[in-house]
Image (cartoon, rainbow, N blue to C red; front, top):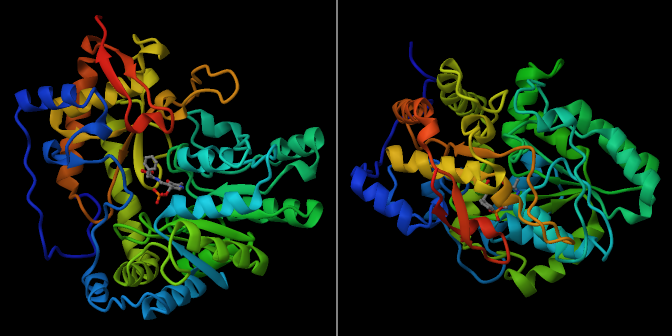
Length: 459
Ligand code: P71
């Protein structure tokens, strides 16, 4: 049987080649066993991230030619503002160069030193931008999310009891805002249900006068899961689902590099005039004028068109099913993966894949490097190296999830590429006992996973 059918045909191709086995061995050593440090040239299938790696449509490329590169008041800014209003329902929008630019502005303006920003699992840049202005990010995701085998359909949900406990312990005034991520990245691309969003907003806004800020980065993919899995939404168009989702928030940060099918861009959007005024006056310090925020006019046009295009049902169905296709090829061979298969990636459970390695030998980092060496497929560590050290004790934190992410760029790779990837991982699983662990030999201060280096330890 065939894999998910692509709702597009291919107009432009970029050649890729498989480096020789000898070159792969050299390349991963030159990169200190860190896939972030590999040269793109040495990679055959690049599943490092779905961020900024998608293929734009002919309509988006046509829009690029209509870039209005005026310093102030670019037409494309107004097109983007309108797209955000139409698709997400927010009245106000501040453009930024990418998601973390928006995180920076939001956190800086909403967090006072010592405050908490509870969230349904951390994301690396989001956590850092909460910590920089003196906040901390407690985890309030449901327990099921920490168990790779648990097949809860909305594993991204917030546990309201955990939120209540924080309020009981610290008081509502200690909480800067509640942060809800869509299609939770570090949990495996797991969605949040509409019911949960509604309840969190009622709890926060009505009972405690707390603001709710979304990380709406993968909200279109989350909306697809709501349509697919939540009772009552089967016949509702994606765009209406999205607008309802966003109505349960005061604002959001958004990395356009994912669901908007572009290579760069981001924004902050809000229903709240005060958040808008504050962040708009500050965007000029860190990003650029408030009508471009670090993006070229042409980039804003591509984001505007991509935001609309990325809500098409046929496209989303293909997209989510391609990820599932790869996941199911692996599940068939009993490879330990996070279940259910998420939206943007398949996550391998490195603790089960390489049970002979102690946590101190970084099983996920090891597995990610081994996959590259086997087949030229690049993946990303999402475990203890990404998590970093405890802010106070300085000790390594070993989260329950020690994962390797095989992230699928949108509209870029074919189902045959998925099959090639699955075959490599299955082959590796058969000889998993022969894979030696790693020790960290270089550790940068911030977001260490990007630039840390490793050496193999003897088995
Ligand atoms: C991903 C990325 C990109 C990335 C970031 C950090 C380390 C490795 C890779 C970026 C996100 C994201 C969420 C939920 C905010 C950002 C930042 N993800 N929220 O998954 O997933 O956006 O990259 O545009 O600055 O590979 P930005």
